[in-house]
Amino acid sequence: MSKFVKIASMSLFALLAAASLAFGQEGAAPSAVSFSGSFGAGLVVVGAAYGIGKLASSAMEGMARQPEAAGSIQVGMIIAAALIEGFTFFALYICMTGV
Image 1 (cartoon, rainbow, N blue to C red):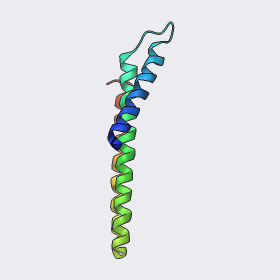
Image 2: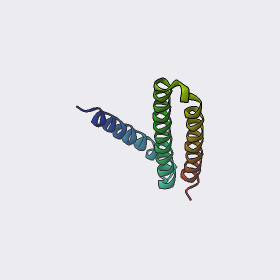
Image 3: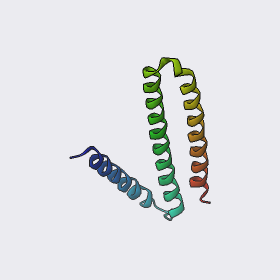
Image 4: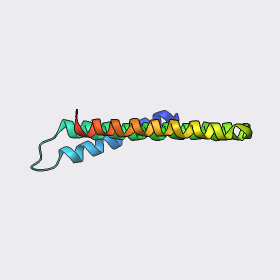
């Protein structure tokens, strides 16, 4: 079984398990906005973590291959990471407020 299929099936199982617990609470009406916002926030965080990990990996490889360019690569990496974090905070805000 491929790695993608394993991760997708585990994610689907976790999603369904969390949904059954959330919708099974007594006295609380299921809220689609709350669930979708939480699910969206999770996707945003996972995407940002993947993006920053890929960015750092590529930057480290570039610095190892060309040590003389390490300074400019590091500055570019920090700027790109800050932009990714800024977008992540904006997306989390949008997910949590339901705008």
